[in-house]
Image 1: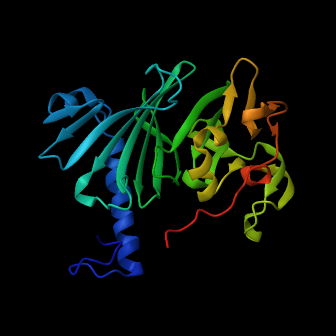
Image 2 (image 1 turned 135 degrees about the vertical axis):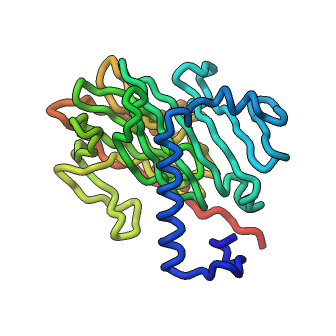
Length: 285
C-alpha cells in the first residue's frame, strides 16, 4: 500500500522509500542467516490447511507452496522452489505482488540455499553456504518468480548461475570461488545487447562481459512462454546452451552452445525478437 501511495502514516517520499527498502533488506538478511530458516517441515506441521502442494497459515494471511523449478522434470530432487506469499500485501493485478523464495541447490559436493524476495517484481537474492551458514553472494532479483533457475559447477574454481528476469528473459553469470565467497567475473565474450540504445536488436562486441542474456519482452513472454528463454548447462561437456525455436511446428530449432575454454564462454547475447514476432501485446480498449 505504501508503494501505491495509500498510507497516511508514512508519506511516500524518496527518503522513506530508501529507508524502508534498507530495513526490508536487513530483515530479510537476518531471516536468511537464521540456521533454522530452511526448516520447512516445522512450518508445514503448523499449517492451518493444505491444498495440493500449498500450505495455508494464520487465517490464510500467507501461504507456502512447493514448486518444480524445471516443470518438465517430474522429480523434486534438486528441483524444488519454495514460495511464501503474503496475502496482506495482495494486489489483484499481481497475484505474486509480495513473495519470498527459498531454493535448495546441490552443486557438486556443496549445498547452497538461495533466498530471494520479490516486491513489485524487484528485490534481492542471497546465496548461502549451507555448511557454514554464511552468505557467499548477493544479487538483484529482477523477477516476480524465484531468482535463480540454474546453479551448477563448471570446474573447481567456477560456478554458473542463470537468473530469471521475468518478461525480460534470462541471463547467465559465472561466479568464481574465493576465500570470501563467490565473486561475479566477466566470463563471456561476444556481442552484447546495447541496452543504452534501448534497442534489443542492436548489439556491440565486447571482449569481456558479465552476462550472457537471452532477452525477451512482455509480448514475447506472453506469446511464447518460458521454454523459449531457457538457458541450460551440460556439466558433462562444460557447455552452456539454448535453443532458437524459429519455427517449432516445422522442426526449425537451432541449438546454440559454447564450451568453457580459457575461463570464458564465447557466446553472443540473443534477442527472441530477432527471429520471432515481437509485436506489443494488444491492450484492452
